[in-house]
Every structure is written in C-alpha cells, then in structure tokens.
Image (cartoon, rainbow, N blue to C red; front, side, top):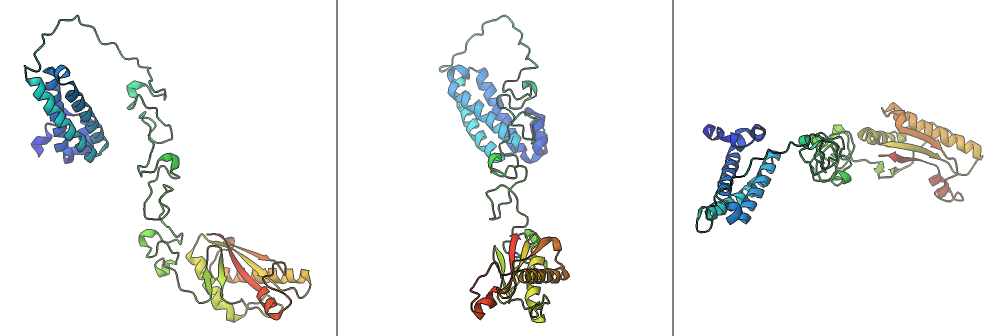
Length: 336
C-alpha cells in the first residue's frame, strides 16, 4: 500500500492531503483514467471518438470533484463510467483504420492571454482567480463566504437553509421535530439530556431518569396542571390545611421536573360575601399556594399568583355543590 501511495502526485496535492492513504486506491485509479484519456486525446480521439472522450473527461471531472468533497461513493460511480468511456476512446483512437493519423500543421505561436485579475463572472465580489465556483455566486450567509461557492445547506443535514431554522447546526433526526433543521438535545424539555433520558419524549425529573412520575392527586395537560381534588384552606382564611400538602408536593415535583415550565396560580371564590372581600381572599389564597411552592424549591419567577374572586365561576352559585366547585385554585401553564 505504501508503494501505491507514492503515485498519488498524479492528482492534486490538496486531494491527497484530504484523504491520505485511506483513499489512495480510488485516487490511483482516477489518475490512471486521466492518463488514459490524455493518451486517447493525443491519438486523435477528439476526431474519431468525440462522444467517448467527452463522456470520459466529464465523468472523471465529476469523480475528482466528489473525491475532493469526500463523497467517495459518488466519486467511485463516476469513476466507473469514466473508465468505460476511456477504454472505448483508447480502442477507437488506436485503430488507424478508424482514426488515421493527421499530420500536425505548424501554426505560429500565440501566447495565451493573461487572465484579468479583476474578472468576476458571477458578480459575487470574489475575483474568478480566487473563486472556486466562478459561475455560481456566493450566497453570503456567514458560512464559508470566502470560497465563492454557494452553500444551500450549510450544516449538511439535508434541510435547505431556506427551510432550516438552525442552518449551522445539523438536525439530530431522532424522530422529534425533525423538519425544522434544529437539533433537540432535550426533546421533552425536562432538563435531562436525551442521551441519558430513559423517556426522551415524556418529561420527568432526573431522579426518575427523565421519566414521568405517577401522580395520585394531579394530571398534567398541555394547558394546565389539573387537580383531582380541591386545595383546602381554613374557613375564610388563606391558611392551607395539611391534608392538601400531598397534592401541592406533586405540583412541586412537576415544576422541578420541568425547569422551563411557568404557571399562573389562580384563586377563585363563590359569590357569597362582598365582591372586594372575595377578591382579596382569592388573591391571598393564590399567594399562599405560591409561597408553599417556593418553600419546595420552585423559583418565584416561574409563578404568577392572581385572585379572581367570584368573577369566573365554573358552576352555579345557587347550589351548595356549585359553590363548592367555584371555590378553587387552578394552575394554568403559561410556558412549557
């Protein structure tokens, strides 16, 4: 293998340094095809086998370009096509019956015109002499803008930049919001990275490996933390009764397990008593619930407490059962 690597200077040094000896066999074959095509052209293939010569040269150019990009499978496919065309071009150009030799006509030597150092064919502000894609304008999006080539998919994740919300970060394609082009290291936003989350699409605390905890008193939806029973307070006061501590501890566990969630704690009363009094009472009870959760380690910045008094009933205030339902505390999710 070491001896084969020595022949690599047939290609550009940039290609060899890009792949090392790992791709030397493909590089060697591409060099051989280039030599065969050059020989066929020198034998007059441009006259006797123009199709085969053109096909071989274009396929070899495509193969070299894919090779330069590191796309070895695509390069190999183009190389196979180039080898077949080169073989046909050599065969046809070697047969003097099909391709008689033409005596060269002496022509006066004309020096090649010097390229214009300011020429910019694609008008992207990068002179052709420095532009790797002189006929394709650079897209100037802050990603490899100096090479002169457009980059329609900066991060190479298969989602074009025009549709990619994170054009410089490849999508992780884990089955969760894979169309937006953004990686999602924590799908359920529970603070436990997906790599170590046993339930990556269901929020749960780190203490339970990122999986949801089974609750007895609450149920979490996309809009609210639903309570299966009321929060009990001392009559006409904002003092929480101990029998509601278990329920509030489960609410705290949800908020601890979902560090980005924010809630509005709403206090409501029935219609008995004065309106101003009920507003104050409902506000005080919402504040008491918030204070309890702060004591359980929930940041106050994540919670808003609001008293609505009797203004938002969910049942009739004409019956005892209706009034009991109206006396309630609700947890509305304002941010997941």
